[in-house]
Structures are given as structure tokens and as C-alpha cells.
Amino acid sequence: MCAYNSLNGQPACANTTLLGEFLRHDWAFQGYVVSDCGAVADISAHHHFTETLEQGVAAAMKAGMDIICGDPRTHGRNEREAVVKAVQEGLLSETDLDLSLRRLFIARFRLGMFDPPSLVPYSKIPPTDFDTEAHHQLATQAARESLVLLKNKDRFLPLKSLRKQLPSSAPTPTVSTSLLATTMEHLQRRSPSCPAFAIAFRIPR
Image (tube, rainbow, N blue to C red; front, top):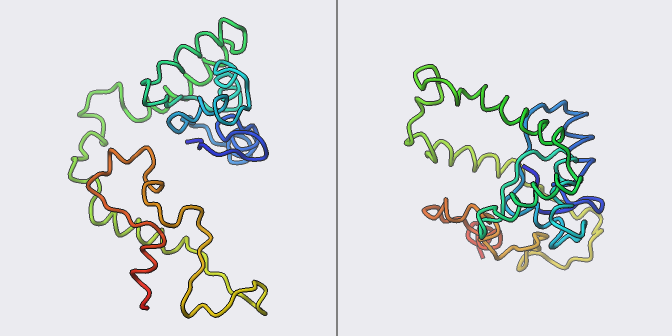
């Protein structure tokens, strides 16, 4: 999934370095890339990388993105129409679309989506195997192992005593909704903690 942010002046979903050079060439990734929801519209609307949505759709697909997760507020209608207009305006070719379709359907065939359920091992996974305690433990372990603890060697940073204060470099340390973003509605029964509150809870005063 390509994200909302940009890198080196190019939105992630239209980034030729990320999707083309790194993902497709260096890592030899043969699967499909789906956009984050609304990220393709952001290419023109918020990044202003292109002037129109049609140009943004074309830039994304030519960079290596295959499937658009459209703006949930319009159920992707604007993006669907933009794909058609991009082809009509010559910004996208049918060959460009065929490449994305090929990547998608290869994955769907490999998942057994066109086979009888009796032949597909994935169809035997019950809903109770989703969001289990084992999953929570693995997610917690991954979060712990991804943390970076910095040492202020030789007082390189002009920080005073940290006995009463603990600095955080997170952009939104007191906001928990940013952890869930557009997945909020699917995870309502979970109660994530924002970084600042989680740290305060674990460190004695």
C-alpha cells in the first residue's frame, strides 16, 4: 500500500523511486500495489503534484500503483470516473491498465478466488482467528522491538535533567486517532493509547 506522504517532492502513490526503482526493480516485487484510501485524490488536491485528478491517476498508475482505494466519502466515484477520462484524454493507455489488471488477477488466482471453496485452504480460516490474543501479543512485541532509544552522549542535545521531563519526538504524541486513521471504524472495540499517555502510564512519577 502506498501512503499519503510524499518523498523527495513526489507523493508516495506517484513516486517513481519508491514504486519503480525500489519496489519493482531492486526488490523484484511482482504483486500489486493499492493506494491508501483517498491518497490518489491527494496527489492533485493536497500535494498539488498535478493539476487535475485525471493527471494524478495517470501519474500514480504509471509510477507502479495498480488499485485505487477511493475517497470513502464518495465511495471512489470520482477516481473511477477519472480513470476513464484519463484514458479518453490520452494520459493513460489500455496497456497501462492491462498491466495493473494482470498483477491483480494473478494475485486473485493464486488466492483461489475463482476456485471452489473446498479447494482453497484460506476458506477454512474461521472469523474467530481474527484479532486474537496471539495477534495482540505479536503486535506488542513488534512495537517494542521497533522502538529506538537515543543516548545523549556528551550532552550533544542541550537538555536539562530528565528526572521530571521526558522528551518525545513524535509529531502527534497526544493523539490516538492518528494511529488508526481510516481503519477507525473497523477497530472500534480496540482502545489504543497515544504515545504520551502510554509512556506516562508506564513510567513512575
